Length: 340
Image (cartoon, rainbow, N blue to C red; front, side, top):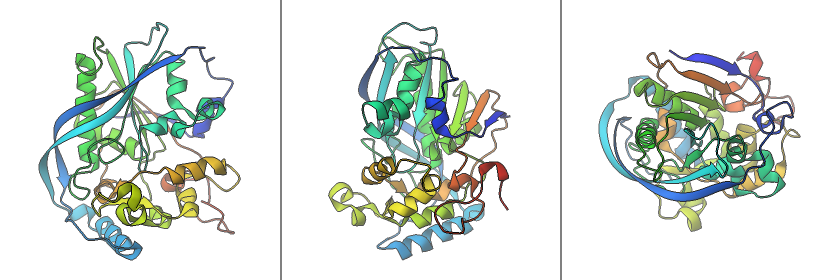
C-alpha cells in the first residue's frame, strides 16, 4: 500500500528555498517527440451530450457527481499520439538512469512544467524541469490525451482518468525498455503528477502497481471538491474560444471566469503574482467531461509498495477547501485544518 511521506508545503517553496540542495549550473538539452500508442482501459460510460451554456454544464456535472457510485464501466481500446518533450542535463549525473515522467493537471499542457512557457527569471522561479535537470534528473513531460498537441479522443466516454493511467503505464514501460529515447533505457521511472495528473498517478499505482518506481503527487489530496470548478465558469471550448478550439467536441471545456479560476487554482488574493494567473488564463487548455466524471472515482493502491511524496499548497482550495472568507476574496482556511 501507499507509503506516504506527506508534505503540506507551498509548492513554490520547492523551487526557491535556499535550504534545498544547491542547483548545478548545468544547461539542458530538450527535444520534442510524438509517442504512438494503442491502449486499453476500463472507462465510465458517459453519454455524449450537447452543451451550449454554463447552465447545461452545471446540470451535467452535478448529475455525474451524484451518480458516480452507480455508474457503468466498459472496456475501450484507443489509438493515440502523445506529444512529449524529453529534457536531460548536458553533464553526466549519477541520476541519469532515473527519469521523471511529468503529467500535468486540467487545462494545462506539458508547458506547465516549463513555467507556462515563460523565460528568464520567471522560468528559474517556476520551472520544474529547470529545477529537476539542474539536479541531474532527465525528464519526459507529456501532453495528456485531450490537451495540447496530443490526440483528442471522445471527451465523454474515452478521455478519462483510466485512459491517462493506461497511457502512463505504457510510456513508463517503453522508457525502461529504451523504446522512446534512442539509445537510452532507464532503470527507474519517477511519476510526477500535478492536480488531476496526481489523480492519474493514484489510478496508475492502483491498476498497474509495478509500472513506476516512485510517485510524487503535487496539488493533491484524497478528497477533492470538484464543485469549486463550477465557479470557474466552465463552458464548451468551441463556444468560448472558437478561434482555438472550434473543431473540438462539446465535451471539451474551458474556464471563462478569471476570478473563478484564481479562486480554484490559486491562493488568497495577494499571495500570488496576478500577471502569472492572467497568463495562465489566457493560454489555458481544456478539461473534458470524462475527466471530471472520473475525478471522484479514485481507487486504493493496495498493491503498490513504492515511495510516495505528496506536496499540497497550503491554500489549495480544490483539495483543501474549508470555508469561504468573509470578504469573498478567496478560499478559506488552511489545508492543515482539514474540512469542517
